[in-house]
Length: 459
Ligand SMILES: NC(=O)c1ccc[n+]([C@@H]2O[C@H](COP(=O)([O-])OP(=O)(O)OC[C@H]3O[C@@H](n4cnc5c(N)ncnc54)[C@H](O)[C@@H]3O)[C@@H](O)[C@H]2O)c1
Image (tube, rainbow, N blue to C red; front, side):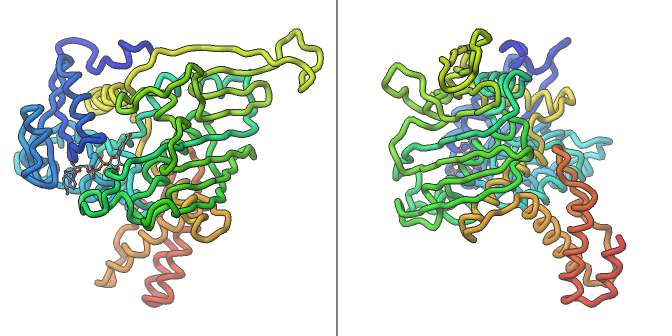
């Protein structure tokens, strides 16, 4: 899609107003969402208000001249909103989404309106800190009829889109393997353990570079290749800082068609080999000295290979009699116009709110990337291979189990949707559904008696 088309949000007649709020307008990403909304002002988009943890945090509200809230529910109750952006610390994504939906529903009921105005929520990546919360988030939004767009903004990068075209082209594959690196040095201030507000970044279960950074690379591996990760094996180290989270690691993955891949990551080493420093899409990162464009990913196909983001591909030309190491490789180059993926993502989000466009990265798609990084963390902990789909099944079963435990009145309430998962990738099948219910029933059997368990297993 041409740049102007990607940034057009409300094509057609007179632009109607699309009102969007930002919850968590922090300096790393939330304020950039505010900027992106402000950039779309002339296309009928309005940054309606912001919500921060503290009323003293007035930076964004003052810069953009909008009202500051400190409670997401109160904000959604008071404001007429088409969309909300959630950019709070990851473990607050589910509570914030729930609060916004509850506020919008109560507003609709109070005003006796036929429909709820809130149509979509953009949730920063990772969708949540764990799979159970992520499943609940997805189900809560689906039940309320609110679309979820997960903020994997690199999917809108011109480099990524071109790489996807090249890697999925019939003259590339089949894909044999992929190699990805995320290495850079985060400054001490990023962690500042004496600051309770940023403590979540170095606490196991909410922060660490696997959840915060590597999820971007995992998501791009899935997006660019069109393949799913079916197994992972990881080693991590936390020797650089005295935090409970990892700082460095190596991961092996197996893809659904048998190809393999590796990830090397560290947030504790000065290095130019990361998406951030090789694409330089985000102006926060200064240019790296040296003329040669560096690559952070390598895709190996049966017919050619591709470096990313140089977009240089290597193959044997048609004039080569015997392709192989005795013949010279040919280089093909292509270029794209660098643009800000966060801005393109925001234009898409507004179209999701106003024009019924489907989210490029749905909640269930974001859940799949979270399952892979959760498997990476689990594998490093247990020193064994882990299957992401198994973790999803267990999370669904655990949610089902706690929902059933809440049935203290002895009445079997309708099963939550978590037992009926169908991911956009169609990996989850009916047999998985059976597996979740059975597992949950077994738990119940030992805890609550067989009558309840039996009714559940027939549900
Ligand atoms: N897409 C990207 O490239 C990218 C980049 C950085 C961070 N992120 C993600 O964005 C999220 C935020 O990360 P961060 O480093 O900006 O976090 P942060 O700790 O800087 O907090 C962001 C904001 O959340 C607000 N907040 C905290 N608790 C709140 C509450 N209860 N109610 C309302 N507001 C509250 C704070 O006021 C703060 O301004 C994380 O999920 C992170 O993974 C994404």
